[in-house]
Image (cartoon, rainbow, N blue to C red; front, top):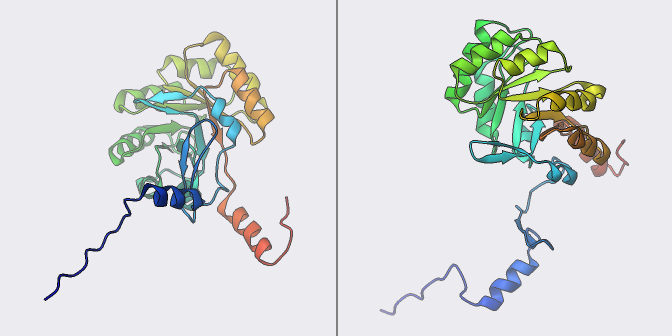
Length: 253
């Protein structure tokens, strides 16, 4: 009885390997020498602007984070290339929501634990549960007093991010209470608030919203932000644009 031929999954021919990689769109190398590997079905629509790469970043437990995607959309979270997720939402914090986001995310998740509608002991309890679930950090909303920030810092070992909207005494108190990172979310005044905080606190890590244009991103970094909060397009908007293309229409915007 003759032996069956051996099946080889991979070819040992170098020339064939080079040809295969050169012809595959998902494998490439940039002029800087960075090798890129993409899935054949990968979508680039939820990618952070390239200009965010100039951020210095905030190093947390050995990992440097330059961009935080501000979203709770599971589909967007799964497809964005942001370094981390800033999952803050306008509802009472629930561990089941945190768990769902942690399941789909491929990067560290910093989850909101209240501080606005949700206050007091519940904020600290949610922070403790989030740490046990595997969150990389927690975010406390701007209305929360410095005492809440301090209580959370004393209860968990992951970073507490305190959101602020102005460079004032309240922000100063939150810094003195031990907030690990200050998240500036001051709308059109974000750049000036970052400048003010950086002037008298050169040591504090600052995360700030940056808009979507290269000009706004550069301004936010020049003001002193270490890392950037970027809001990706919603899945609904992306789906609308996709359907317009399918119908042969020109998508709005």
